[in-house]
Image 1 (tube, rainbow, N blue to C red):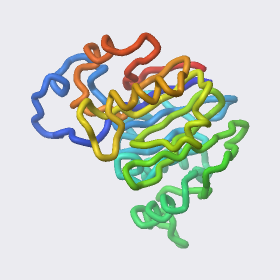
Image 2 (cartoon, rainbow, N blue to C red; image 1 turned 45 degrees about the horizontal axis):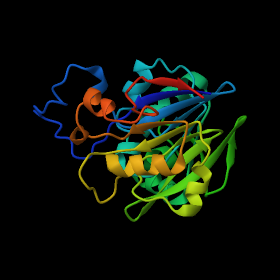
Image 3 (cartoon, rainbow, N blue to C red; image 1 turned 180 degrees about the horizontal axis):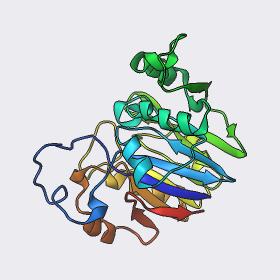
Length: 253
């Protein structure tokens, strides 16, 4: 299985215009982060987790020529706003794009992209094949996806486990039952927003505590704001089996 980090950043707390902090002004490409998303490739099946505002740019940068499905963690704009750009794959692959999400997320997508769900569609709009999911495993091609429910303050969010790899973003708490799904992993990806306490996201220390509890062979942190600090400095402070992910990082597991 091949995993590509399409984006490792977040809209949370980032001044988009004229920010001159050391992270935002850094020339190190590892400090330049698009919104969080990953591409999972296994058994000739290509799956993207979330279509944030940077989705089109991420597809072009990583030269993604084929996409079999999209799975959504939750409905916040920084994870769904790029759905319209699915239309390029509709045109190229000449079929509807399968999307997988819990019913509440599908409902929000129908509100925000109503033209894509209309009975009579305007020519050229995205065409979607909708699959509602719950907290039970489901297949996409030959790939079995197991949801992992976490809490983003009071909002339930799905992470996803594929084999010995799991991707968790926008978590603040994880129940004991869901943590059982995350034990014995080769690779755990977990959000780590910043140093200071946050109401709906794991901080760096909280993410490290979960890694210590679950003991994956390797852990990567994503959904990083500039408040976490410079990549190189934070990386040097982490245990050997924990790293900050960065845009374009590719791993196999």
